[in-house]
Image 1 (cartoon, rainbow, N blue to C red):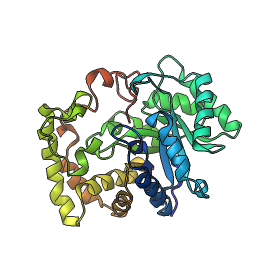
Image 2: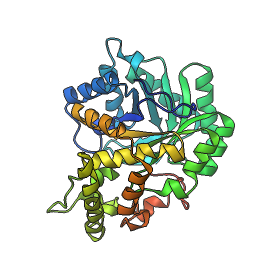
Image 3: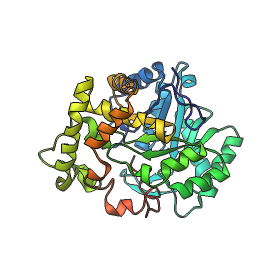
Image 4: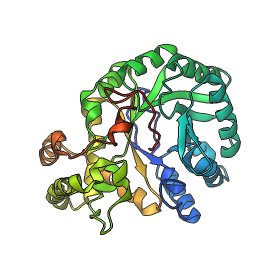
Length: 342
């Protein structure tokens, strides 16, 4: 089995990508041996699309992937690399950069850290509101012509930006948060636009930052994520965990976990919404095996209706991000594009 590129018109044999951020960032870095073993397990199973960014661990993630792809494994992998998230010495995000000069400079450093002569998909992590998307995509297009990049992607952008970018160079896929708890792409035109233009979707956050794992419980001292993820705020958390509990009987009936059911729902949406590849954020090999089982579930239309009745889109309490961050996302109706966490 091998994952085909999203956006080529062919459904992927394995509709999964491996999100590598958690191996280097967001929380304590994963054990390197576990991380490398996870990448090897994914590649051997046909999950070949590896998602990374130059700002994940401020270069650490790319260097980790380089070590994992030694001994001939680079040929098995499709490297999807995001750029543009600017960080300070303390790790804080300080801006987004999409100017053409930065695009080329960032790729030069990524190629060195990854130990490769090209990346398979290159994408701005977020829209730089101070740089026309045509300029950013035009710079990537020049890198395609030079052989350093194979395909062009986007991340967290709305329909107008997608169309403007696609007019400059064909877009391979759009990376967007999409889960049972984040259904916005269904109603804000992103999925419809991608399907119309033949662009694939790589869906990240498929487990709602951990809420849809089925194992998350309210921490005694509060969750620090509540400051920027309102769905973890005490005012919303009880409601959201109740929704997760409503998925449990559906998962139990199939002998699977809630997490597998939630992942299978995202994958099954390809039937109606076009090619969707689910980004699995895994740090240990057994998570790959669980995800492959979810990918093979083959949920029926009846199953999908039951899942969506258990978790209606309008029943989720809290927005994706805090209001100040939501206002800056190009993928949101009022957005302008400056949220970097993924």
